[in-house]
Amino acid sequence: MNQPAVNGGFAPQTLFLGLAASSLASSFLKTEELSARSFLLWGLPAALGLCLLSALLAAEFQARELFSGKGVFSRLGCGVSGLWFAVELIRTVRTAQEVCWSQFSSMAALSVLPLLLWAGWALPEAVFDRSSRVLWWLAGLGALLCAAGLAGQLHWQNLFPASYRFTGADLGQILYPEYFALTFLCPQRQWRKAVWMPLGSFGVQAAFCFGMALLFGARQGSGLPGYELLRSWTLGAFSRFDAVFLLLWLAAMFFRICVLAHILRLLWEKFRGRSVCEVSP
Image (cartoon, rainbow, N blue to C red; front, side):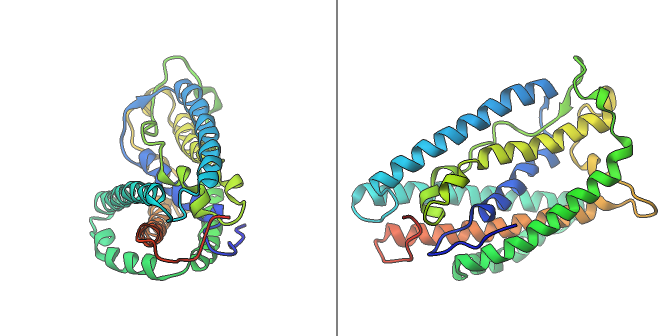
């Protein structure tokens, strides 16, 4: 499922694993209600626009060698990108800890944070690419089990009623720094595949939020957090799949924390003008 990167850098699937987990976070947490029509009609063009913007900026940044670490302009670009990635790292840790506390009454995210930061700082990119393969297979298996457990409860007629509103993803949280640093993060020309990550993130949000609409209908689903979709899963005697799925999601979020820490290390080295493994062509 995931091909390891060569000559440094991350495979696109490795980056997207963390983005998919982060995209699901806004569905887990209670947010503003949004109609299914509005989510589709607003979110899809926005995702396609981000794909186009990401591709154009990647080509421009590659031509100008923005992440080469040579010259004032390049170091300024690395510094600004580093600040954005640092903010994203803090937001990711906060979100993971919020879920840990609300669902498990645990401080696990903060407890393992030093270990995650050390691993992200010290391990090479190839380790993350290999590890992401395992997580992707587990995520795929979890998605299939979730679909099987909910299949008999979904009602397609509830998807687009005019009066229906459901708790969906926060469409204000659609910008991620990875979208604008593809030539730095992806090796050779693999950034051309990575420009579709905004569309993939939208697809993850849409699948989860439309599942809420299909399951709960017009009245029951309004205002419910995304956890209720997982709690409705049932397959025989085993009916508490939500905890297993949340643990898998937390593993992906912890993986994202490691990746973000490693990206910060690479940007810091570039900002200082030190020679590191080049990840852009």
